[in-house]
Image 1 (cartoon, helix red, strand yellow):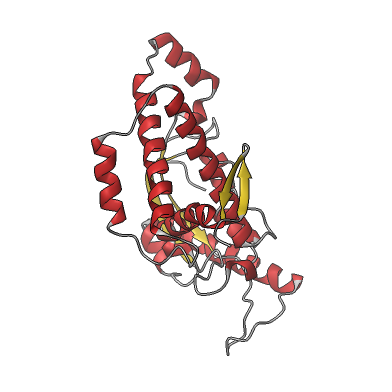
Image 2: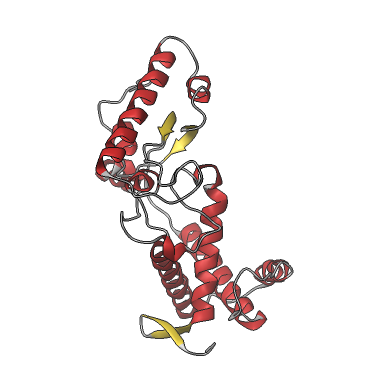
Length: 263
């Protein structure tokens, strides 16, 4: 039923429709932001998320995912994290007398114009509007709070020296090569993936990666080198790559890194 409790966060109960609001928000943003690599991480938007398991190759791209869990569980956990954050910001806003204003109302009105059917049969206009309102208030309060903070130069330098990776950004380009073994045959039928198949796929991926790197070292641009293997290799670049505990992140943020390094 629409009113049944689906989750309890810090003592506050939420219905399935309310939880689904955050689930779909996170899911849609994830898909839109990672559309070019969905096939490489094994996420099929046309198949139930409950029937899709996160692979080891997917974890290379989505570093906070857990190998073996379903994509449904991953997005459900993220939805609850998002919900808890909105709840906390709303509570802080109320405690500090941070109230709803005309700018937030205008944003809400704009959002309500695009209310669609992607949120499932349990969603109603009133629930959608209420959760959107909570999200907008949380965002506005957080921005207001951040804008109010002031620090001395010494405080900023001390914080930076304590954890440089939290503040530094790296200008870089990289290529990811899909090392997942095919789990379907030529006719599209599902097949069992053996350890031998996984090893062969990873070996093939390394051969591709080595060939791309050799071409790059020989003078071909990294993007052009990757384009030669577009069925398995994906080029990307960023002028503001933030730290993560991935292999790439650890290499980029190693103290030994110098401008122009490659590997």
